[in-house]
View (cartoon, rainbow, N blue to C red):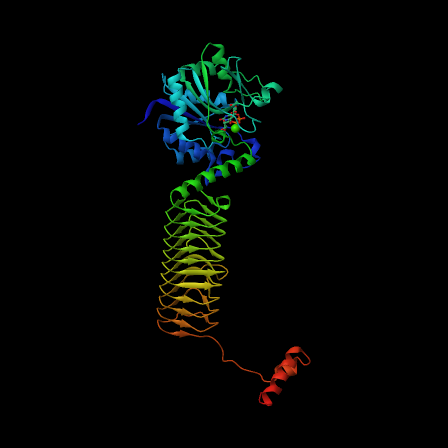
Length: 480
Ligand code: UD1
Ligand code: CA
């Protein structure tokens, strides 16, 4: 049910200078989606009457992601006045006139915070009757955060930013998490009085807290149960810490859902991955993007799957695959490289040092060793011997190879595309197939073998080979 008295403001206009990156901070990936995507997903869960996202730095790139993730969000452009206070001021101006409900403000760079904690915050705010209620925490290292300054009686008095804080204030362990609920009217009034008179020359949203207190309003701070919930991401060290934390949560969730993860520390699972019960994941495995793994499949060790689908009971060992589909009961690896467009049928095999691209391989067909199959279609139950290669590229264009079912393609066959092999066709070892092979035919291109007797003795006299050949000849003559 939509909460008609709740509006959410997502702050996403900051520059993120501490990332030192050409990519906007909030678009850096975390668990396979942009940082801001986590905040938008949480905002959606709260089902507020309105979500407003404030953008400025790299606004088009941010807006594109926000529009895709949360189409109902209203995008507001922050002007040249910097600071979180200015961002919220402009967001509030975009609320329907006379909106008198609660405004929940969330920092776009606090991605691990869950909807349940935000619901508790809103409920606490409504029950407590304060003009604002904020989330606080006690992180191991408070450096960089705004500190919560309390009165001697323990009431929240104001927030002081790290850069503006005195030594004594910097010693305070309780920090502002950057998550707030305000009554809309009081927020509007106070924002108008916030100045840029501080170390960063910005309009701080945090100044609203002190102004509310000076005006005689109550403000509450609700400490969160665990400080990691509200850790902000400002630099890449914090990004990796948040990623590890998120990954541990994701791994644990799948373990409790019936997935064996042997080594959580070396297993990385993106948030959009889907796993079925009785999947086994061995150490050193990364499951990324929209990867799906069906029941009974075993993945790893040392495997990276990106946007790949793995069928029930399949085995994928020491493999790198992107945009591939691996059928039920199929076997892949060790050391296989499946590039986009690979589709391996049920019980098929792509083996050691084999690479595939844009290749549809039928059920039960095996490419067991040293193959390259690209821009190809292969039927069912065929066997491509060691070193079978599709020569799909003539230096200018790519061409297709179409192979029927039940073929037996011998070792080191080169299929020069465009070319077709019919059902049940064979090739001899080392064949170069340049013409179509009809169903049931054997293709061979090998010239008859010629043995030049005595060549080593004549051309390589005195070598180990010559001596060995001589001794072997003598032995044969003596009838041994
Ligand atoms: C902010 C808080 C600090 C708190 C910390 C929690 C202020 C002044 N300080 O500091 O008290 O401990 O978060 O993580 O609010 N943004 C805008 N417009 C701007 C500037 C920032 O939309 O002009 C957005 C950013 O994109 C970001 C969020 O606001 O998503 C916070 O900005 P950031 O610069 O990271 O603030 P902190 O210094 O971390
Ligand atoms: Ca921050």
